[in-house]
Length: 130
Image 1 (cartoon, one colour):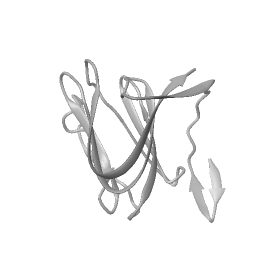
Image 2: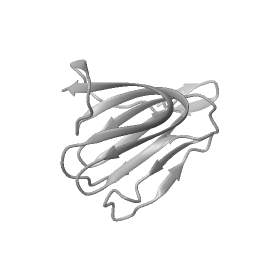
Image 3: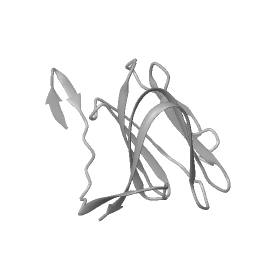
Image 4: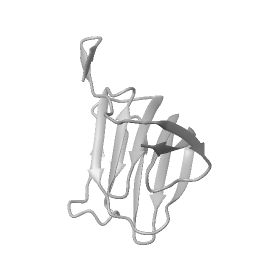
């Protein structure tokens, strides 16, 4: 945790030996996203999870085979947002604007992932070496 501008920020706690930029989404990867209004859907064989920004960041796990499907919304409203998204085989964590807000959930999507994007967002995908 870090105190910055009278706000408490949560930073990801990971050990990373190297980040290698890759062209396609993998089950264990990091997404760096910057944009204003956008929707990103991660699709597998038996479900999907979606997240994005529409004046506030959201995470939708209704189609991810989660036992507690839900739509999570950020407290803040963001015209432009920077997201750091950690995607694993059974979880997703979204750090909003350097950790000012964090949304995370369990997900259960099998098979090879693909990513669909709508709207305006720059995306970089990294394989995480641990």
